[in-house]
Amino acid sequence: MEKFEKIQETVAYINRVTDNYHPEIGVILGSGLGTLVDELNIEKTVAYKDIPNFPVSTVAGHKGQLLFARLKNGKRVVAMQGRFHFYEGYPMSEVTFPIFVMKALGVEKLLVSNASGGMNPNYQVGDIVFIKDHINLLPNPLIGPNDERFGERFPSMHNAYDKDLLQHCLDTAARMGIKAQTGVYVGTTGPTFETPSEYRYFRVIGGDAVGMSTVPEVIIANYLGMKVMGVSVISDLGGGEVVLEVSHEEVLAAVEKTVSVLVGLVKEILETL
Image 1 (tube, rainbow, N blue to C red):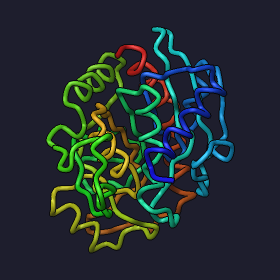
Image 2: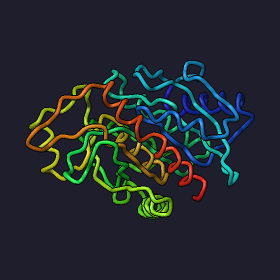
Image 3: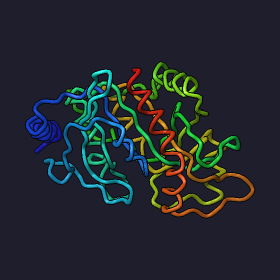
Image 4: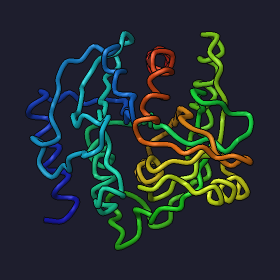
């Protein structure tokens, strides 16, 4: 079965079990950020394992379910509680499959979140950084034959993280008195954390933060004509004279300290779109 048919089958199942919910906004909840769901009015939960053609997340901190919720402003949201990573062994076609499904369900705006390592000397652990651009060091998910039913062969990435939505995010943070910065996100394959030399290299080529996700989904979202917002929590620091060792558990712990603030901020961003 080719991708177009797989997507149609998946969407048909989701529409059936959600009574044709038709979400307008998509959210991808990254490492440790799944507690945002506690602030949403969840109307339906669908486990990845029950969805035809959906992969299953294997990473700690990623629960593996689609959540359908309604905001106070009446807009409908679908949130991925757990994403898929290239380093798990999935091909890019599976890593990005949920974005195709979201678009087919009706999603026009996508908010992606992650935890990342900071190289910018102005960053501190726990900082909230809105992504203004990225540098892709992963295989491009559009490599291979192009299906014109989805998008054009050579999509523009000049506004990968929509400038108007970025400004909305920054204005919302300022109105709430929350410190937020902007930065360029470097997407790598993982699953190893960076060497000290890699951190310095990523900084030299223009990166402010580095992580193992997000970029493939953002490329596909732009390809499909969706508008994207990106937010990252700085979970560790590198690129300076001393680079501290870090573990996945430490990343989750660092994110946890910022979660309550970020959750409130993201909720307000979505409700005031």
